[in-house]
Length: 312
Image 1: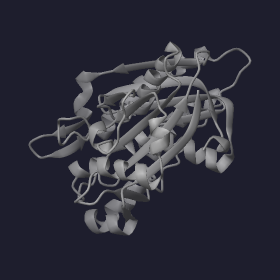
Image 2: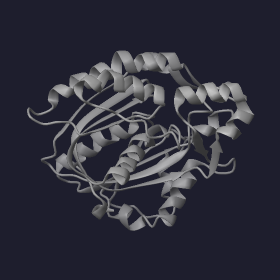
Image 3: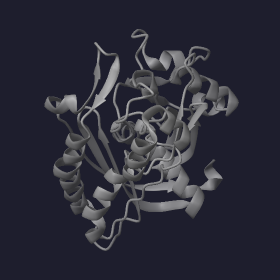
Image 4: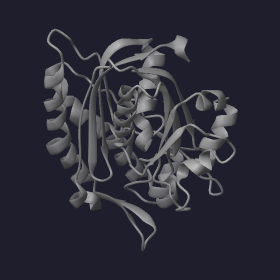
């Protein structure tokens, strides 16, 4: 599979540590920042939402020709405030997408990897040559600025990941959803706020996600080595937990979102793009991806990836 480009648009309102401390208290801010590793976040303004931001990005980043060349578009968003029609409609309200398969996924932090599973299946069918995955979330709409658990974590962002694929692509995955655990990260309709049980989420990573990553490692071809690892950037604590478990396999996932926060379903594409920009092209490299969170759900993928500057 090849990435032809990744575009990220953040909410226009930046919130640094000083501004956060004014909302939750200086001592709390210091303690939380040391634990999460997040020093800055971005949110949309009170008047805007993430779908409008994604739609404006099409114009500002001159993406319309790329989008119209795609055979399929997968939009990952839980921002369904307007309920009907789906989020994709508001992103593309000004554009004609006839002859394009448009799919909406109401998924969270596992959504990007789940969308890649769908994209790979479409490529394998032979009927699709190009596609794009759009991830767009603004949890800030359902998090009070004074919420000590969640306000320091989540950012609002939209990412566009342009893909091409081939029938012969190497691709393995495992995934699952545990709906009985949904209260670990769920919207409370009465309070109109997101609620999270951080301890239960961390336990989910340790007892479910990591063992299934280890299971997937059995699919690595003999004599080959995973050279890139991209895991959901929930917090530095979460990434370090995975790091300690996978270090014995020679795998070292990095936390790269300290300056942007938890971007939900956009953390993995953002991390891929950041690593490529810092370290150079990703050429036919065996990559491990792991997305997990709200649901509770996870999706792990092992595949070969090409992402070069020449493709942008």
